[in-house]
Length: 170
Image 1 (cartoon, helix red, strand yellow):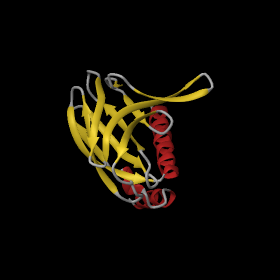
Image 2 (spheres, one colour):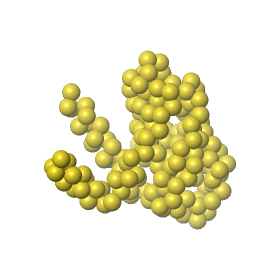
Image 3 (tube, one colour):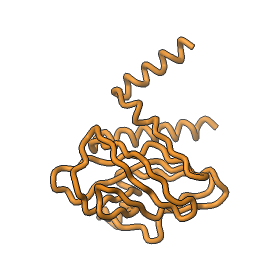
Image 4 (spheres, one colour):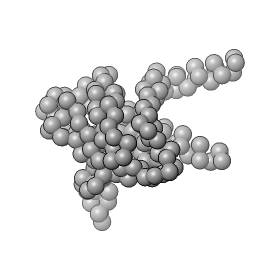
């Protein structure tokens, strides 16, 4: 028990006190959504990005097809990828597939929720309600933590490293 408490205290210290933001998990049918977060915006910015990990524990694929947020006039599912030497961003027609028994990581530089036509600035340390729409599972309302770009990147890298540790443990 003492070793567990020491390990937990060490983890909180290494995370810079942000361990609470890793504790957010939402369940919708067979889908488990971990750590929803959005990037801060400077005044007047027209867009922001939303990130999370979506696990599908079911036997059927589902699709993230859109959503809504009070702070944005439009919510789309986007992908960034290289086209030759140019990084391009585009909406994913038909939504993002979440494979059965698999997971999809929405992160900077890849798949993400695109908040467009921003109605207000997203400020670090706040939380905003976002509703995501899945083709089969339906809708779910979640709280997205608002983090600066560097913190979003750091947390997503930690999620990736944690996922690799889980995969290597088998």
